[in-house]
Image (cartoon, rainbow, N blue to C red; front, side):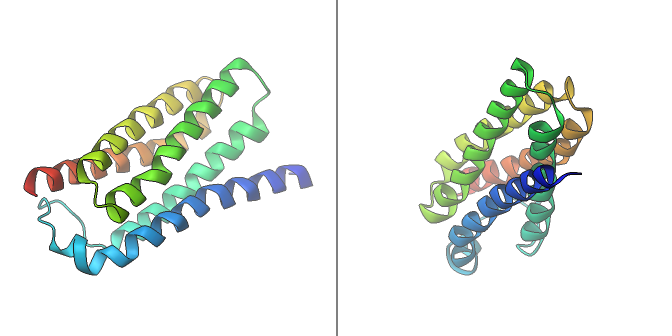
Length: 158
């Protein structure tokens, strides 16, 4: 791996983990009060699970993004995969401020459903050009689908 590739990997890690950090700024203060007071579905894990899962997923996302940027030759397919990745990442970035910061349960549900659609689109468009990058995003899609059921449960119960 050359210096340029290392810089790209670091940039991808900063972007993805940075979004996680920004999300936690909105999430953490709401956990003991507002979020604790919500009725939640029985399959909701304890709050301590979320930062571990999300940190792992953000690192995997960053590696997938880096592979697309650094390891795949420029093409329309690569551009499409990166656009889908950017859209899902933007949706990821706004979910925590909407759900936790503004207490927008229904809007948060709409955002997380759209996020899942764009993660799936990213995987489908990526698998053709980098199977490993696509595989790195599969656990993320699974987690977001699971989180969507929690979000939907919170909407239904509150």
